[in-house]
Image (spheres, rainbow, N blue to C red):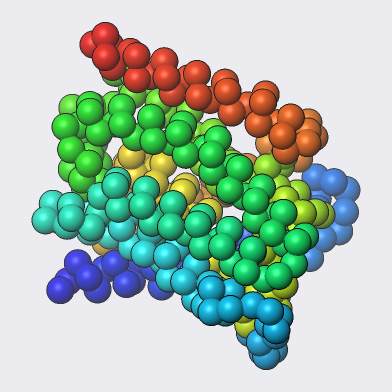
Length: 306
């Protein structure tokens, strides 16, 4: 019961503070582009303003489109709950705090994302949703290969156990396959945070967030909150596996996790701002194959015993 309460606590806290880091990232991006930009609390105001408005749905849409915002938010929250932040000492929750659970929830979230965009009846939104599915085709094999290396090295898919093994030094960067896998997984984390060239703030409807074209009011606010939670969840998964250094006290562990995840979230803006602009297909050819090769090298190194 205590662990369930801790799961709820970490989800609620991250839901409340994640928009702050999104606002900090937006402010930093504006400053790097020599713009004034809004203050760091603008994301809160945007979401609150949207929640004050009513729902507007296309007449041609079905229950998939109408219920998708709630499903997206619930799935993102479930992924966050599965990451052992505050309950990192409870080995008994491997059935839920498990790599396979997170993989399936992430795949389900992406599927709903695409299904809702097609159910909107807007071809423009469906195209954007299709591009999101294309990202999954490139990113998920790399991510899965990296996680396979971690699971084979740890001998388990239980995230709590993996965390403890890395902390004690049983596995870690001293193992070449683990170190190489962390590089490829870092690329996956960057892609999932929706940074350039995989998403553009000035053209997000056309790229990664195509389904948002037909959402409005509270539905749009809920989807935007879900996307921010998803980004924090991906960063949290990387920190849990590859940088799990934290306190045993649940409150201190949660504070440190939020700070670490926030630093990663905001730091990605520097790559976003100074990196070159590619079209999304060109970028995938240049980056995804390299990341896939790195993940394959990591798996090969494990197979040969390195």
